Length: 278
Image (cartoon, helix red, strand yellow):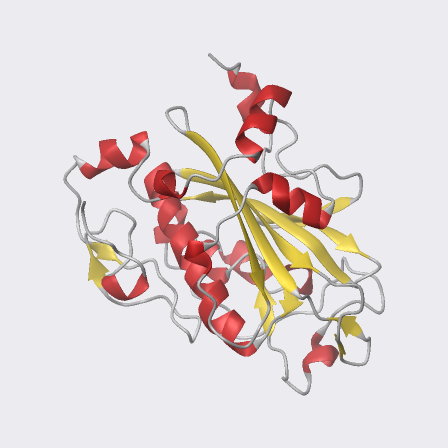
């Protein structure tokens, strides 16, 4: 039995000496790239079912230094501003929703990447939060040696985006990672999950370091896609329970919550990720 006090800590936080926070998430700013190098938060399944509406604009960030990514860098709209923590994960609280639109939570993304690849992954992770109750999430950009730049502040455009996840809910414990190219075509990430250890090598960031060393080292090397579909204890138990119909928790291309109703275990309709009961 693992000491429960370990899991009362903020497990989503990567190892860092210089992070800050807004309502609903923490972040570490990169002076080299003039944007956040990671955003971390706990995603709670019950909260993504709430109905606080998305904002309609982004906000210059009082916690970022002068010369950082801000609204002036998006005036040509070649690259849309993309969330690291999606607004769909902030439906529980008006302040969290507002703060999800600060530029600490934004990176320049290719249009199709933002609207399709990244959004679909966000919907899938949101559905997993219903199955596992809580997921620890870290998202951020990754760069090649000479990235393109945009805007008056010459903001480097990420070549990749990563997302790493930890489940630890008492009956299940697992990690998974994704590294996705920031390209203007839809990318099939589902076939390409990676180990958290490989994301650490790419980014130089130590994720989930607060776990005991033996657990961290073991879980970070694993890639077990079946766990995240129907191979977990949480899925097995909840699939046996009677479920009521709820509004789909998926987000549309227009960044609005889907209006369809569903009884799917992951809270999504067929358009946004429901695979039906197996």
